[in-house]
Length: 144
View 1: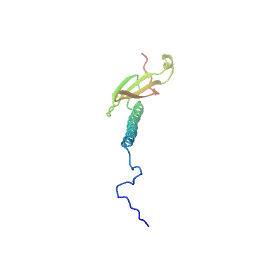
View 2: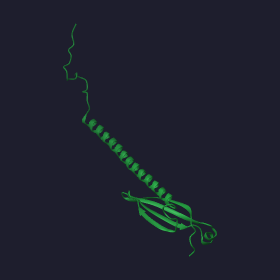
View 3: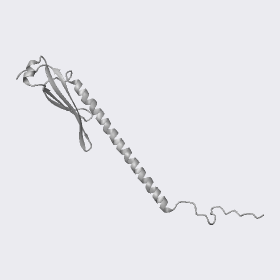
View 4: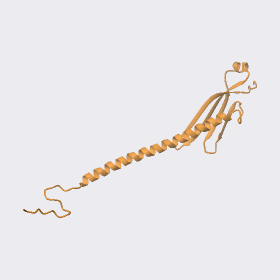
């Protein structure tokens, strides 16, 4: 009975292909990995930017609603235009105009006013805004 010799460690048997990757395979794998990571990071960056925009829009919506709520209690319901700035950098504009034509306004026992509120802010390269419009009852304007 003849004993077979084991090949020495670290060397492959003759006749078998060597195990491992070629340089081309490694380069292709790295290129695919870097392309995938680049796409993933781009998506994450876009997602973070959209989340920040949504937060700014939600804050501006809250501010424009609070501005509407102040009309009649802290801000008088009288025709005209006013503007200002909130402490967090948002700017606001309020426009109050009599509603209806002159003959209708004379017939009504109270004044009806069209109120437009707008909150705007600078978002990097562009200016964004949120606007709300409503009608409010107020004191009848004195005839001019």
